[in-house]
Image 1 (tube, rainbow, N blue to C red):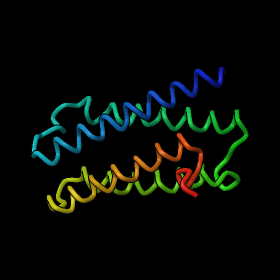
Image 2: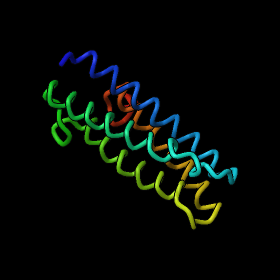
Image 3: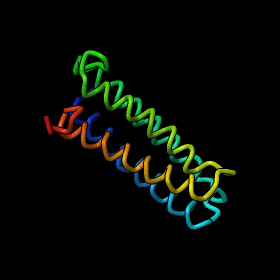
Length: 127
C-alpha cells in the first residue's frame, strides 16, 4: 500500500483519537454522563485500532523499528504512559482530583508523542 496514504491515515487517526480523548476528558471532568452515548465508548477503540495498524504498517514499510530508532522507542514508551494516564483520567471511581491530574498528564504525554513524531527526535530536537 502507498506509504503516503498510510501516513495520512495515521495522522488523521491520531488527530481523531486525541480529539476524542480531550472531549471525553472534559466531559468526565465536568461530570457529564458521556458513557450514555455508545459511539463515545466504541469509536475510540475503532480509531485506535486503525491508528495502531497504520503505525505498524509504516514501521514495516520504512524499516524503522522501536529499539533500533530511539525516537520510535520514545514514542512507544510515551504511548504506554499515555494509555495508563488516560485510563486513570476516564475511569469511574477515581477521585476527581486524581482524574484531573491524570488527564493533564495524559495530555502532556500525547503532546510529547506528537512532538517526537514531528521532530523524529526523542529530545524534541533540543539536544
